[in-house]
Length: 602
Image (cartoon, rainbow, N blue to C red; front, side, top):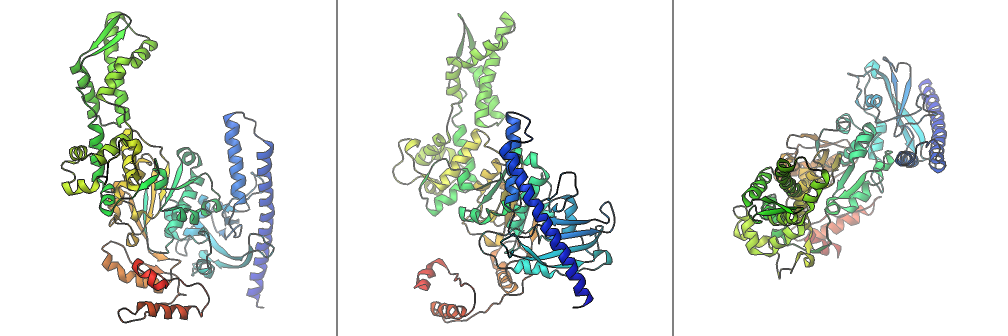
């Protein structure tokens, strides 16, 4: 063994000892957090304050228990200058400390000081003398991990090289849930993860570039950096389907976070069970942004300023008169303000009361709050309000629109032509009322649009949207309503669109999401798909008609063989290729066009 090998072994032994110490301290932290929860220790407050503190303690215990099957730290920084000079900081997925006042044994990867681990280079070392990375393997005693190696980059000396440990981690076979990437985040990914809370970011990511992992790690970073603001506003992760959500479910808990809602848009807008299936033309129209204008017209067609006539408001033995023209003027003014329909209705009520109040106070002086409430609730005011600005449910707008050709024609005039109106209408016998209606998945989008016109839905402080290239304009609008005062992380690949309304431009998607000026950042370096496969995918880009840059891959361990075959001979050629593949280790998958699958399976 050379002197260099001996020095490396001694360094590895010291790091293993530190890792064992961290493991012992973490176990004590978990036990202590659980004891706090069980005994209520340190919970001196009562009521709501105690409940909040109890929730925090439970969350802390949970995040410490749910660390991933990896090392407690994956990196280390030795600083050459600045306030950290002479200290070694170990970087991991969770802060580990023996007591609050002691220096941390492990620093959370999201802490500001940890950024140098991802961003420092030989040209810009950011005060880092040495960056160390650790290799690991599953623990021999069933523990989380054993350290198996280390490598150092002496950035302070201008030394920089590709990391063999990072390469092995990227190429390590993955089975089951999605793996977190905290140990292997690249500088361009780190910039996206640490984007400011108020910033909406759109990530155009080629296959295997880690765009989904970037979005999830940004969620974890925001929760760490702005815990109160995010938990107060809420954080929603929207995936394309439940299978996808189960695939990513273990990533955020593994990063030490909980309390994040993971859902699909279908779940978020589900007002009724889906019992009807649209044909392709009807579905396409219901996903079209023009339908939003048809719905808006259909809703506000119910507002009729002249429907009530004169209004007489009782006040003891006296009657205050609101002339029909005054009531119509109030309704028209509120209508011009373009507030949500439900807000507009209450504004009309308030202005009717104000009209009466002004006249009553000229005659008898200031009126009490009880008097105002009595006028607000009197039957004549309610009846007049129902006549000029009726209360309405989303179903009462959508069902007649899709079931009555005349109502649809009035609302869609100049927006949809006759053929489109026919395609949009429900087929078969129209339901007698909305209560007996059968709804399709796209109908639920229409109901959600009208619900958004009636009043604002529950909002979130931040929403992460994955596979966003498949969103329709109406789906984007549904998401935008839930993030009116928050920010978004939009993830996808225009070259992987699978729906009839798949996006051709991120600018169009962002406009429908209400963020037309958001930055679009491409990720073009792949970490999962071998270069041979990425190269084949790049050859298709020119035919797709989307503005997507070609990708490259850091994986060189794949291979690609193309077999030419005569027309009609594809099944036999595939069978031969599969037989050949079965002689080697690993699983075999066959990807084919839907019509070819039965024949290939046979």
